[in-house]
Image (cartoon, rainbow, N blue to C red; front, side, top):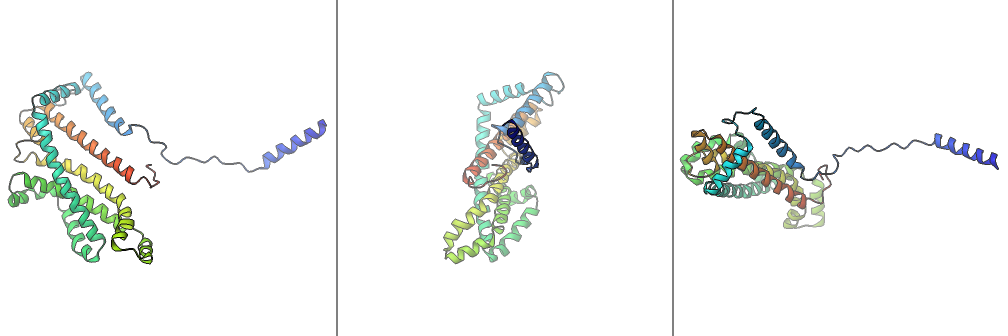
Length: 282
């Protein structure tokens, strides 16, 4: 009995050695998303700034400490200056963004769904893209005056270009087999746009939307320093004249917070709308 058991054990060991080794699959994906991961960088930057200020490595006149900036921001908020400037900047940015968003989407659809539209629109938009948008400011001042209209118009141009380019690229990249399938199924024009065009264009649209949101804030900080009487850019320009670096940093922090929050909101909407996609990011 013992000999039989020993023989069976030897056969089992030999079979195990001869069996092919199962290779462990290597994980190539980035892994699970970390909670509040996008705040890690800003928090680390703030910690380094505070540590350098506490150690006396930064000139307080050039780069005030974070706690000094916080005190200045609180003072500007309590005296009513900061809330007024923030509301003015938000109104300008929102108005220009909405106009640019509508223009970018409409032009992209007209150009992407029609050869005639593409011939008339695409070259013109790319020509506009090649011209520095801020270089149009003197001309727009002559056309629209020095008031609010030209500021909103410049922001709209800054916004509509990336939205148009990315949405048009996504429309052009839709597989032609889907178009043929829609024709075989006898879909109407409206059904074709709703079931084929919109889902296919959404990824590119959201990329352009994120660039447009960021562009609206970048354009605003320049425009509010031109014949403005309120707004964050005007507040920073006045602080420059009086050497108030803490006030300038307050404005930059507010711009940065608005940019981060608006970009995060677009990302959140993108993940909800495109939840059907399985991508590296998800």
